[in-house]
Image (cartoon, rainbow, N blue to C red; front, side, top):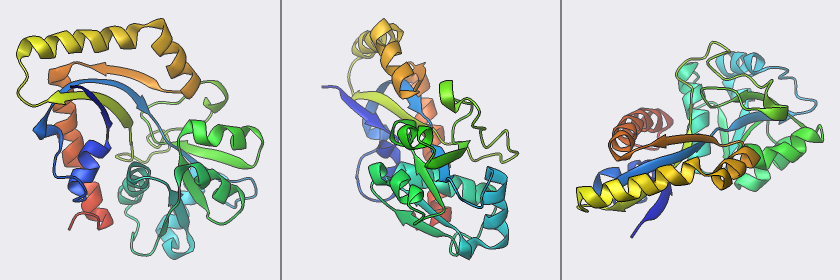
Length: 233
């Protein structure tokens, strides 16, 4: 048995939703990563991400930020923690991922966090503007001008929404090696590259050992952020 998983393997355990996490399975490989866009309405007073950060620092109660799932809210929390904002005064709104950019376009919230695929059509129509990207590097195409948080001088705000393959705990080393090789070939295939390009994914293969180390580091980082957000008590 194999399963496709994501950052929720870690965050849902930390939040108490799931009893299992990466230590209860065998990580086989990570496949790709998706970065989130921070977007504002076309007439927003936040012309840049620095305007947004300044508001978080000076008048946090005046700022509303929307995200869909827990990983998107995590990306918000990482920015708030990185700029030392008073999270209790910032209005964090949970909205269905597909509706986040529409809510921003309608002027109902100041800033929204969404996957590129969810936001691109409204960006291209001019109804919302991207001000920052959560990943370690910029995206391509029409989003190539959107800076990362690190470029803006906001360190420790990087968030990667990755996808991975897991297997049951206790499978043999030979089984791990076999499926690791299969997944490596998947990420090297022309079909996978076409899908990744379409959705602005970053292909980031890690084998079993590296995937486990990566998840261990991510778990520790997520615990710090989720404690700051009040999700982990």
